[in-house]
Every structure is written in structure tokens, then in C-alpha cells.
Length: 403
Image (cartoon, rainbow, N blue to C red; front, side, top):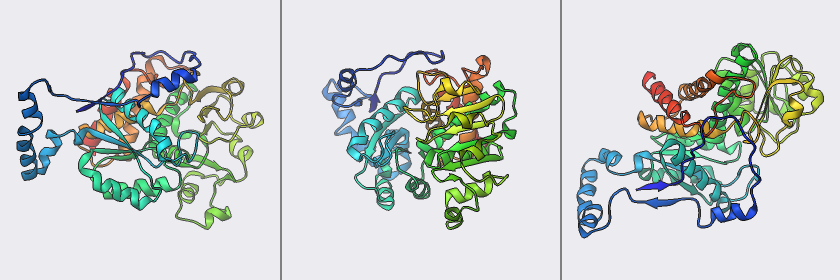
């Protein structure tokens, strides 16, 4: 069986104005959900039924019982991605619970089919206990081939992903973390070229120390950028801060050690003084006065949705390149550029885990697609560019082979 959804036909052009959608149109499109199951075999005759179901299917079940490896080719499990959420950090809505998160997870599954040609089903769970979620997925493991974690709140999301990676013998990725980080790195690669900078020499400030912010910082460090200053609601994260020093094993403490080489302290003003790049992945606002402190030809990624940390028209007064998370401005940083191809490449190559090298390969593949038409308003390809998922998939599979 496969899951049906409509495949977008829009091509590679930069962002165009998006029409305002009516509530009536939105709710009508969600009636009955956004997914359905279709059969890949005919079911029009008794013979069809005998092959697809009883008695013929018994032969297939016996074969798998004798050789479990046959399940990889005789069922859809090996190519099935489950989109898993507990509904604790849904979009900008926060902790709205499992049932309310289901429309989002259905949409994510539809994107897997449309952009990665992978079947996917949403699984929303009525528990926020990490161990219970792990146990549930371990018990369901014969039914799927990969896990996309979605909209799980921090810091629980870090523990959950780590435990699932250890417990399951298949690819696991929290897209809010790593999909965001991959696309940010791809966009920053293009922005650095547009402004004539070397990626490794950039001074970067990341505002937001949740799932996305920490993953972005880690990804930039993995890519060779050494000066990455992380901001949370209390200001700059550094080793001297009392709450950071009190928990030296936390993600924030680790980044304070590895990503703030100048020992910056204070708040946004101190962090942005002389900075080349601002990356916003929180709901906090960026003061225009702070933008003035950044270096010449600055790069501003204001990615909060639907309200960016700073509006593009304000950011452009001081920045040479501006990106947002919205589709109605140029340079949309959209996870759909990354996750379908990453999972497709991992499954094509038979990978058991999604590694940093695979994520770096994905980011570079995305960045390369924008090279030919690179400009201040086009640093990444459109999310609807049909070249993206195949290129990312091929790059990820090649990284698996190299590793």
C-alpha cells in the first residue's frame, strides 16, 4: 500500500506573494484529514483477492517467519517513515496535546510522500514520558523503517532522540533540530558567498537555545565555524554564568565550552557587537539598535514564524542578506528542503543512523543547487524545486557509502 497526496508542480522561482487564505478554505481542506491509503495491487477479482490476501498472503507470511529479512522487500515497513509527536511544542502553539497536533503530523506525512516519494504515517502519543515513548516505538519497530520526531519540547527532545537512536536499529531524526540546522547551514553557505566571506571566519549569534537553536549551533561548529555565540532568555550562554556552571553536562554548557571562544558575556548588544550573522530561532524580538552594532554587510536570518524576530524591511537597512521562515519573503528557510531527501537517502543506502556527515552532505547539496542563480535574494532553492530531494538523497546515500 501507499499513501496518496498531491505533488506540487511549482518550480524553482524565488518567493512570490502568497494569497491570504480564508478560514473556510483551510477547514474545508482538512475535512476527513489529509491522508488516505491506496492499494498498489489490483483487487477487482477473486484471483486478485487470493493473491493479495488469503490464501496467497499466507505463503509470504511463512517466508518472512522463516527469514525475517524478507520483510524488507515483501512489506512496506522498510520504506515507511513514522512521524511521531507528543504534541508538546507544536509550531508556535506550544503544548497543545496529541490530538491537536495530528493535523500537523498528517501534513508532515504528506510532505514525505510529495517530496521524498516515501510513505509515511503520523503517530501521536498520549504520553510525555520519554521512556514510555521509547518503549512504544520499540514495540512498534516491525511496522516501520524510520522515525521522524516532530514538535517535542526541549530539553526532553534531546533525551528522547538519543534514547531512540540507541534503542532502534533504524534512522531516527528530530526534524525541528536537524532539518532546521541543515537548511540554515545551506543558506548561510550561500549568504557567505554573496557577501564575499569565508564560512569558517564568520562570527555568528544564534538567538534561541531550544531544540532548533542548539542544533543550529552544533551544525555550524561541525561545519568548521568556530565563533558561535548562543543567546537564551537570560542572555549570552557562557561557562561563567551560574546556571550554566551548575549543570556542566547540559547541551548549553557544552556549547558554552565549544562555541564561544572569545568568552562573550552579557545580552544581545554584547553578542551582536561586530557579529557577521544573526540567526533567530526564538520568539524574542531583535531591536533595530542592535542591528546597527553588527559588521558591514551583515547576514540576518529571522526565522520565527509567523512573526520574524525583525521584519525584513527593517533588517535590510543594515544587512546585505536577509532570510525568514516565511514563504512570502525571499530566502525562505524551510525544513522541507532537507528532511525528505535525508530520510530517502538514508533508507536507500540502508543506513541504521543519520550521522553528522550525512547532515553536512545534505546541507552542501542544497547549497550547490542555488549556486547558479546565487544572489542576495536567492541563497537557497525554492522548497518546491523538484531538484532538491533527489540531490539531497543522492548526497546522503553517498555519505553513507563513504562512512
